[in-house]
Amino acid sequence: MYNTRPGLLIGFHGCDKSRQQELLISASSMPVSEKPFDWLGHGMYFWENNADRALEWATGKQAKGIIKEPAVIGAVIDLGHCCDLLDSAFIKMVAVYYDLMKIELKKFGKDLPVNRDVNTDTYGDKLLRDLDCATLEFMHKQIRAQYIKDIADKNHSTLKIFDSVRGVFPEGGPAYSGSGFWAKSHIQICIRNANCIKGFFQKREELDFILQETARK
Image (cartoon, rainbow, N blue to C red; front, side):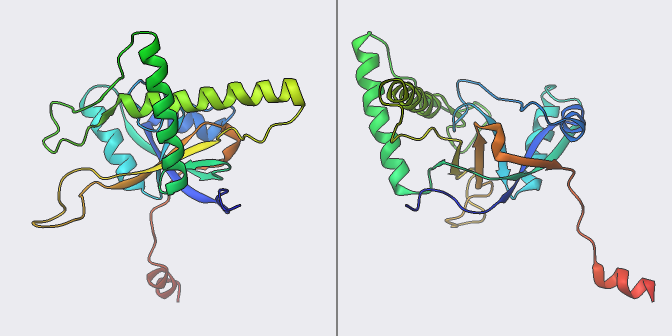
């Protein structure tokens, strides 16, 4: 009853300037990340209401030679049917699919993937989330397969395919000495269904409207 996330929200995607311009001109296709360590699974990633972190991420990629010119593009997003990992019900659901995946991998003599640290990360934030990505993708695959079977057998299904995944990522070490807050903590969104993106926009800088109003007089 309360699983649908009502209303729209703003997300920011860090990218190369060329991709930013491409999406502003023609948003017919959605760039999808399918890396095995994407912590929320496969899809297009957004920093929820956090343009600064999106630009910081893109700038970091520039330093590694992955991006030529860092840029940020904003999006108006409807999460639709969201696997919201800030909600205990969905955390429990993902844990169930983890157990199922573990059984299946064991049956075929395969090892579970693991979340890993990056050598340059001094805080041990497990930035490479192979296990989490595999678990979420296993869940999506199982739900989709059962949904398709239900439609074929009964012409309806009680299951819903997830449009998006949302999670909080504590990162970057204490914000200050003795702090319980982490310097780079953020909420991230992974969009799987392109229809969730209602439109892209170029980020505006905040204006001092009082100063502008005074200048006009």
